[in-house]
Image 1 (tube, rainbow, N blue to C red):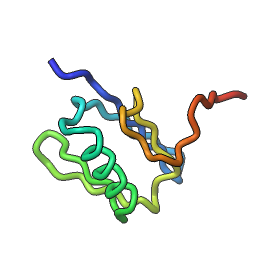
Image 2 (tube, rainbow, N blue to C red; image 1 turned 180 degrees about the vertical axis):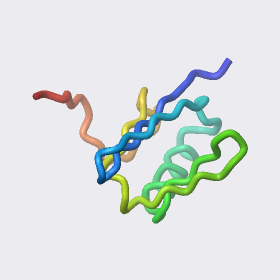
Image 3 (cartoon, helix red, strand yellow; image 1 turned 60 degrees about the vertical axis):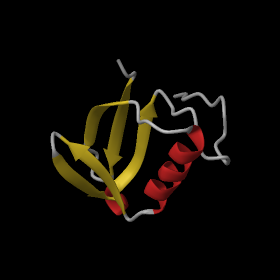
Length: 84
């Protein structure tokens, strides 16, 4: 059984969209390349229940992937904590 990941999209208008998906297959270099391509695209693309969901990046305030993928962008600051 594949580990489960969660994606939380926080939109500019204050709404939130939560999704669950299986860990994606591929070697870490391929996953890193695909993640970079997603971040450079004008849309976040997701297959949801057999449908293609395209979300314009300009409407997204930020997104959160839990737990973080093994391969993350090189420029990522590690070990950060959210505080009030």
